[in-house]
Length: 217
Image 1 (cartoon, rainbow, N blue to C red):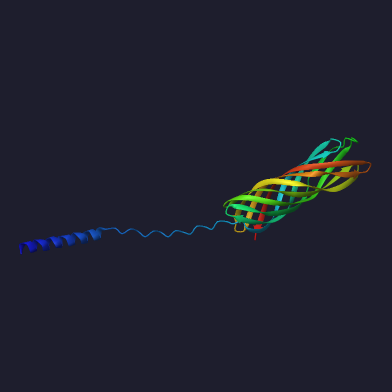
Image 2: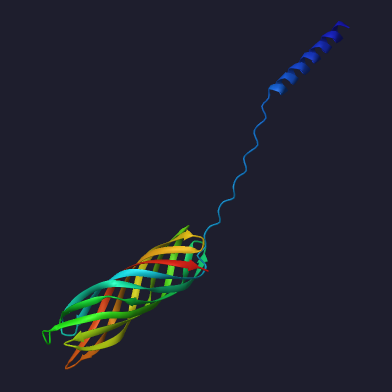
């Protein structure tokens, strides 16, 4: 009996100690819900926008003379992009108007000659790497530009064909809205201008810095 009473007392103390431990135990707090990650921006699809910029132009003449000009440009662009993982590629075109004015002297006559830009455009491939929400891209393709040369009151205009290459950075600024900054270099073939009694063969190249804003559809 004494053994039984000792066993019963020990069991009772064990139960009491277990209850006290359970009462003092602290239950872990429930983990806070994790907000779902924002979906990654995709560059796939069509887009269209407008741009403004500044051009620096260098003209040459068949006689060896050359002259420079600069001015504001502006226009619209549109394109379509596809995306494979981080690789973005597509086609883009632009068309715009120019206020680039250039002037110098014609070697053959020794009198002032001026060149004015009117309209221009291009059709280009575009490739880039996505660093969500930023796109680093390069571009290149065919370009056209219309110029008007004036010499002693006589003028003529020609459409030059050439190439354009460049690079830039584009970023998502709002849902369906992107902005960009890009640099472009363009080089155009020589064309012959009939300026009264003088014929001038002239080509030119341009450096352009542009900023644009587009809607993605």
